[in-house]
Amino acid sequence: MSPRGVAIPDLRDRLFDAAERVVARAGAAALTSRAITGEAGCAKGVLHTHFGGVDAFVAELVLDRYARAAAAARALPGRAGEDSVAANLAGVALGLLDSLDPGVVGLAMSSHATSCRIREALAEGAPGFDAIQDALTAYLDAEQRLGRLPDDTDTATTALAVVATVHHLLMTGWAGAPDPREQTERLVALLV
Image (cartoon, rainbow, N blue to C red):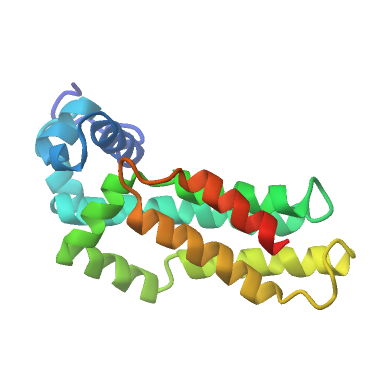
């Protein structure tokens, strides 16, 4: 545990990673500020000091993971012509699926304060599913210009189908549900 008043390097990431470990090990119901800070090796009050509470913390965790997935998607147009179109699309889609534990998604959806905070941030321009969809469209457009997709491919609708499917699978994922990775790979293969 860090001494009081001493800055903790990468505190935000440390707390996010700790929260994901708590959810993976004990489920979403175990995600309390005490469990998160204990897992991160921080003082109990640090989460409330930096985030204002668990609801705001979960919202920031979700937004952080969306931003990471969007950054990965934005790099995809630069990979046009490399590997296969299906492999590239599936890579981004699977990365988004793996970006959040379904338990965290469930917490975000079930808390009005958390979901409102996420919606507000997205409305203010935080990267989310729209940014990922735009990046996938740009990638598919680049592949189309290279002749790796037919000229009549509706790239925007293809990108929407991938993102909408992943969004659906994230929102409905739970233990015992079919493996979303297999469903995603089948969809991508069908689309391209």
